[in-house]
Length: 113
Image (tube, rainbow, N blue to C red; front, side, top):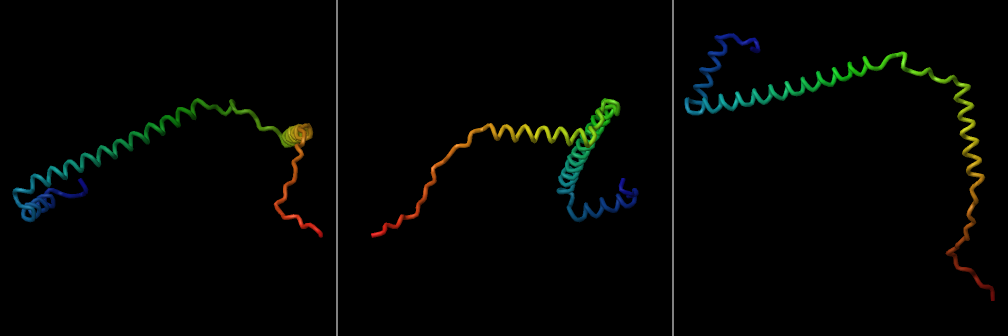
């Protein structure tokens, strides 16, 4: 445990007994034990979450095969399909009637006398 031997642990316990006193030592030991359990359970929870996520990723990788992928279209096919879509959009905009709007000006008109 943390590279601490029995002699070092005994020394730490004696110093804690002297510093804290016999009344507070059990309370502090319980608080430290509770803190250690909470930290350990949090670390275990994170570890299990990571393991579950990694296993689900591995399962997904197994399900997806390289053969399932469709080859990418070549540049010419992409270019012609783009041109066709572009022409369609231009024709749509030409077919729409343009709405003529009346121009409104807030400038005062000067009257010549």
